[in-house]
Image (cartoon, rainbow, N blue to C red; front, top):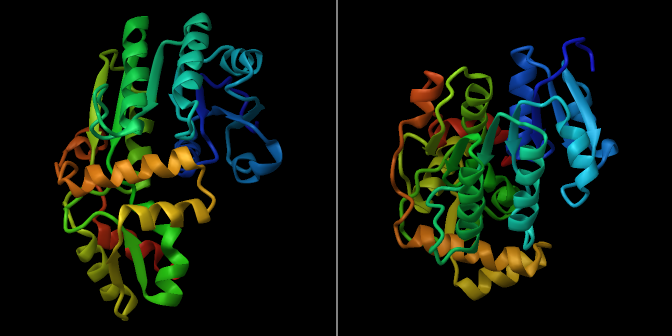
Length: 292
């Protein structure tokens, strides 16, 4: 670490899209932090950030988690949406209580609910309930569909001028990962002791057809959205390397979008950060070199 100040913030999931952006924004504010990573070799970008302290560990190894939590007051809790995510995060919460953490900022998901037909939304709700029972101060960040998720289709957009999903004509209030991270930063450094739950969305709800139109406008070529069946999408996800449990969960996620259940627009980004969230067209402009 390049700063002598002992960090009181721990980031988990620090090499993922939200976690890495959160780390970057903390570094830009010159706020020291500790990051729990499974591999130091795969965290080179984090090592370069001012104020970063990297600790090797794994949610499955309680001793490594307790070591990472030593002296920590605020935690950003994030893990992959895997079949064991619920138990891993629950055990992490137990370790946080043992370590006298004061505030847990959990990255959850829009519409998290114990009775949801979407497995991701159920497991997030279970962990949220567990955190509530601890008595710790908490912040639950419930973002909608990530704009950056479209980067997984960058090659298809670049070479085939199309991308695929099962969302039909439904509108979704997509959110930029950079705006999620900005909300997380403010909650990690705030003196506000009240627990909060934030639905985090972009400033507009748009369909996948409108996504295609925005891509076409910025890239100056026609990009098409192809609505496929659940079965076709499932096969494609598995071929891309997604574990079957996670692939099936993504199908459930998109069924939730297709039902029009993710079109709500929240003002959380503006309220917490004082800045308006990015529109989808802004995202495309910023990332257009990846689609060209």
